[in-house]
Length: 86
Image (cartoon, rainbow, N blue to C red; front, side, top):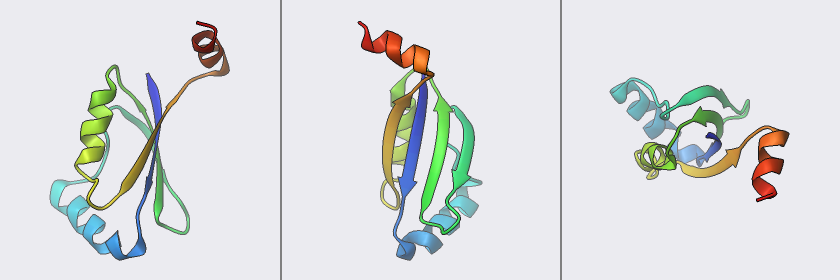
């Protein structure tokens, strides 16, 4: 299943985020397909494909002291309309 994960952080967390990224070698989430950062900073947008949302929850939890996450299930219009018709 596809998920859009939006991360937001206050500017005072920037240095701590950069330090942790350097320490662990990046910040990718499980199943990450695409990742973008907002031009002004403070926000990230990730599309991930996982079979179990627990993978996303675990990945977000590792950063939850510095970044607030919103996790949104996404799909094509056909997939969403099919799910809504159930």
